[in-house]
Length: 86
View: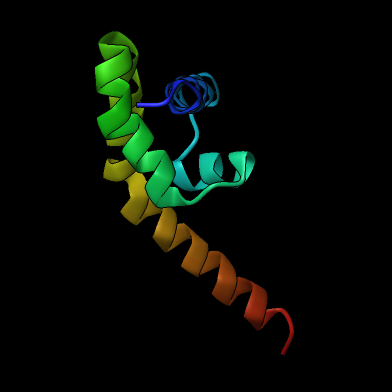
């Protein structure tokens, strides 16, 4: 693996852990795709820094467990916003 990819994976992981962000938020911050962020954090990082990979995995698992709640809140906000324009 190229050195810059390893550095990117570690930088993304630190960002996710420090800011407790989602894959989508990290992808937007770094200007890369969600799939690249996910691959960096779940596959590449394990080869480079296993302890950092375990930390970021905890954050990703929490995000996955809560995503149905976030989606519901976003939908609720959408329809509340739409009612205000009637």
